[in-house]
Amino acid sequence: MFKEWRRSRAVQRVRPGNGRSLKRFRWWQPLSRALFYLPLKNDDGRQVVYAIDVDHVQRFMSDDGKGKAHLYLDGKHHAESKLPAAFPVQGGTIEVASSAFGLKRCHYVTDEGTEHQLIPDRSSSEGRRAHLDRAHPVLSRWIGFLSLILLVIPLLLLIPQLIEVAFKIPPVTERFGTFTSPIRLPAWLNFTLALGAAAAAWERALRLRYNWLLDSMAKG
Image (tube, rainbow, N blue to C red; front, side, top):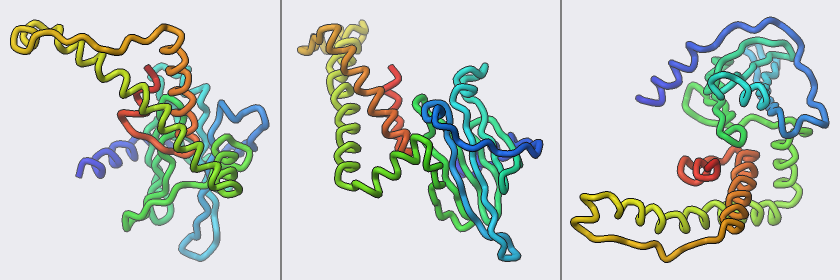
């Protein structure tokens, strides 16, 4: 019920496009742009291609920090919406949502509820990561596992420190006493772990993987 309400709200944010042509992905844009495609067939059997274009620079520079997603139909600007976005298309809806490190969702949800991730442009960071997964699946799995470890370790190290802070609250101290975290990390190690977590969250964003706890921890 909540998902349907949220999707309905997102659909209301959709605005008509201006018909401009979709610019092809440039070699210097892997960190600043996301571009995904969805080929579908119309009711008359003719294949059309939808494209989702998100400018990360514009997203981070926007007043609300969310930015916009742009929908193209057969290479022409068809619609736009603030993120998170939900674009009604043939047979379903394209849902787009962002995280601090990229996109966490760019999926086609059919009217029956089936979900399909859109196809990233081959030249984009997401496209290169997808190509690595197809060409070297074992290496890809190890990279994904390493990314998970780089997010879990800082979380585990943070838990005792959060407990220590909680035990400084007067009512808690009066009832349970104090607690001192056994973990004290030097500044250089904290910095290194933070960089590793950020890199891991970015790598996961290239695969549109997101966990509210792990990936939100990476942004600080």
